[in-house]
Length: 110
Image (cartoon, rainbow, N blue to C red):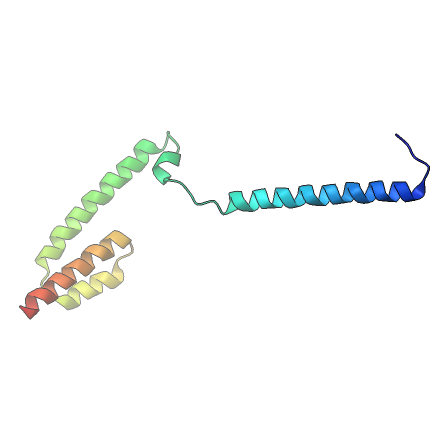
């Protein structure tokens, strides 16, 4: 409906701008909540086509960790283990090496 009153037109435009501003704020809040939503379990969200490949990589990693564990059993020098620790890139590798170092130090104390 058209109106000829300029003051009423200003109020209408102002109300429309306020509604648009509120809508933008709601959209920004929605985006922010989606952007910072914690990720769910990565295994559930994996692409099903890539699942066999990721499982294969996980099995390879487990085999490599088992081999590393055997290698660490043979090392009896803390300095060598420390060098390996500094060269290791993966968390699980570092974890195994630190455990081997703790074991050697405990044996030295005994």
